[in-house]
Image: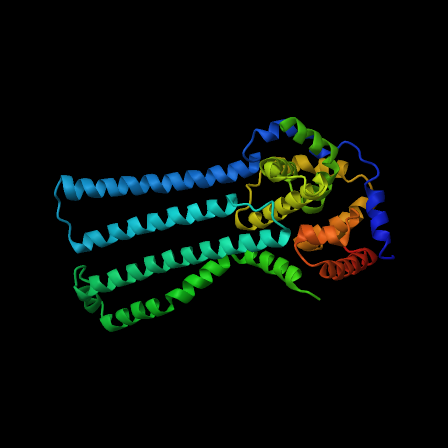
Amino acid sequence: MDKNDLKKLWQDAHVLNKENIYDKVSIQKSLSMNHSKSISKVLSDIKLKILLYLLVLIIFIGLMIYALVYLGLSLSMNSLIPLALVNIFLVIKTTSEIHRFKILTSTADNMTVKESLLFFRKKLDRIKITDFLTYLIFFYLSVILIIINYLTDISGIKNLSWSNEILPVPLLGILILMLIYLPWFIKYQHNQRYKNLYVNLKESASILNDEK
Amino acid sequence: MEKEFIELIRNHQGILHKICNVYFIRNPYKEDYYQEILIRLWKSYPSFRNQSAFSTWLYRVALNTAIDLIRKENLQPVHTELSKIENNIPDQEHYIESEKKETLYQAISHLSDVEKAIIILYLEDYSYKEIAEIIGISESNTGVKINRIKSQLIKILANGQE
């Protein structure tokens, strides 16, 4: 086949323009909508998740304030640390979903295809870094709090470890190793999460950037 | 403005159909994505200032939206409703009118999202200059890309690959 035959083939393929599946979609009705049905469903699912996390977070914080301030309970560090971690976890889940929502709703339709790609990539990179940092802070805080807990022997880990003939030093060693390898682990987890998206973006960028 | 927009879309509907076929031919949500393109065209319409032909602007926004929808499906796949997919099987056959059309769309489906955009514009008889403006690359690079994509397509068509 000659290269010029492609245009002819394309034209021939579109001569018979019978009624098609898209004719079912009403243009007028579409203009009054924010998104199509399936996109709306995806977005409202994310909104629901955000609301749910926020609600649990508010209830959790409310209960903590009620217990600590109103009832005047004095909780030990041992009890406060897990509660604080749950709070941080909920904050991270909420922000992560908000980021997902932001990615899905951001558009750059009026730009050129290349500019639109760069815009999206920049936005995604920023979100990926923020996500990475929040997860890193959360896990570092968790490990640090566990170490503090251990060192002050609040939870009795020391005794428990000795009684089970597990040396506390290896336990500390594992925690320190976790601290060291944490950034790589989170980075790997993030790369897996955004893998498909980046493969697509890299492929498009290489086509658009390659001058020859 | 709404009436004017609807009229313009009706006159250029073929462009949208072709873009949707190229990007979403096997997608069970192609009608929805077509509608999403319409919605985003309407939202972008105030920015259309007659500096270019309406069809050029339409291609730019519709291609960006189609690529964006594909991209975001990688991040958050739309929920698959089995009934919807099953219902679409006869539609697909109805839609693909000729063997030629199917062969061509099959071949194009092997291209990347950006390559698809370039080849649609080429097949629709747009000049290298116009294609370069829509895609955002230089005119000479457009020529190189088109030649490469054409060779690729011909190879696929000759091999009769799926």
